[in-house]
Image (cartoon, rainbow, N blue to C red; front, side):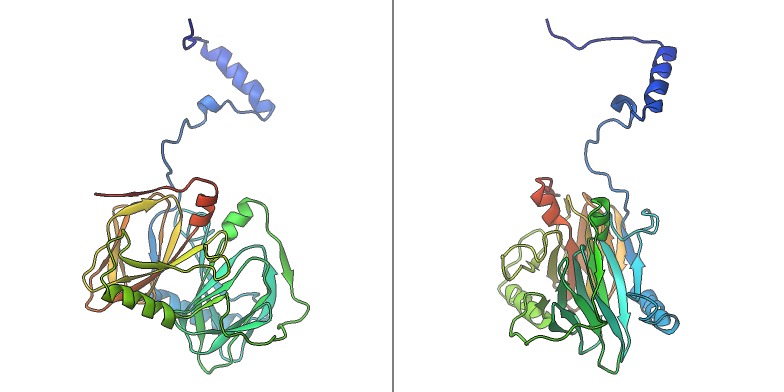
Length: 327
C-alpha cells in the first residue's frame, strides 16, 4: 500500500543535518518559505505627482549637463523596491532635454519607450531616422537600436521613459555600447515610421470607438499599440496601451499577472489599486503591481486619457499570464 511517510526526527538530529547542508551551500526546500499560492508582489501601489516631478526635472537641468549625465533622468522608485525602479520588471523615468541640448547616441540590450509629456518639436533619432516628439506621442527605441535625443526648440522637452532594465538585469543579459560620435547621421526620411505613434492618431481612434459606444470590456474604451511589422506587441518585452475614460466613467476591477505603469496624458480622477485610492490629474504617474486588483474612475467633466505599459508579452510568452475580473 502506498501512503505518506511519517518520520519523526529529533530537533538535534535535524539541526545537525541542516548545519551540514549549510556548510555545503545547500538549503532544504521544506523549511524555506513553503509554497506560493498566488503572486505577492514586493512592489506596492504608488503615485508620483507631476506638480512635484516637474520642478525637480527643471532643477536637474540647472545642476547637471548632458555632458555630465549620459541621460539626465529622474528614476521613479517604488517605496518597497529599495530605490531600484517603479515596478519589479519595468522602470518609469522622467527625462529632460533643454533647448539647444543633445543626449549622445548609444544603444543597449534594454528596450525603451518615450511617452512625450511636454515640448513641441524636439526629436529622437533611431537608427538614423529622425522621429518628432509632441505631447502624447509614443516613440520606441527597441533593444540594441542606436538612439540619441535633441531639442532644437526654445522650450524644455520632457518625457516619460519606460524600460525593461530590471528584467534584463535579472536575466544577466545587459549590454551597452556608445556610438562612435555624439550624434547619428540622419538617413532618408520615411512617411510612416515603425517606431513613432502620434497622439493625434490614437486620440482620433479612441474617440471613434467612444462615439460608437464600443466599450463593454474590462478597460472600457482602450486600444493596444501594435508593432507595425508583426501586428503583435510593440516590443517583445513591453506592451503599450491607451484608454479613454469618458466623464464619470468607471472601469471594472481586474487583476493581471503583469507589472503595469500608468501615465495620465490628460484628465482627472482616481484609481483604486489593491484597496488604496490614488487620486491623479494631468501628467501624474502611478504603478499597479502584478496580480493586484485595480479600477479607474474619471471624476472630472472632461475625457481622461491613460497611457500604460506592462510586461505582459513576457508573461504570455512564458505561459504565465492570467487575468481575473471582479463581478
